Image 1 (cartoon, rainbow, N blue to C red):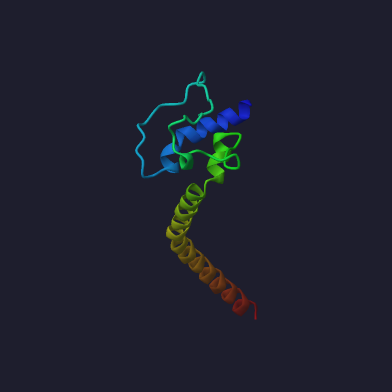
Image 2 (image 1 turned 120 degrees about the vertical axis):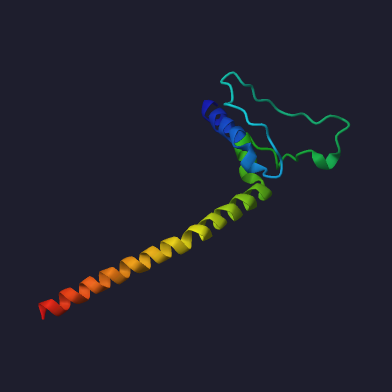
Length: 112
């Protein structure tokens, strides 16, 4: 119970990342006395706004991991970061390989 509440608190702190189109006012930390509960749908809620039993999870973190849109967003952002980083790494590795080949060539010619 304690471990899931800690992970749920971390998810709440990073909620701006989960839904980038929604603005959340910055808060400090989630209080250690915070309480988590279950949202019960009222009689005036539309049927399609309610979660089905299959969609309900035991914790906030599990619900987030099961959300397709959140997963797709996180995957897209991760791939964008990797693509931005990749050319620099590739260029550095090519330079390193070229230096290594040059040293190897010098050693082979001096040994002969």
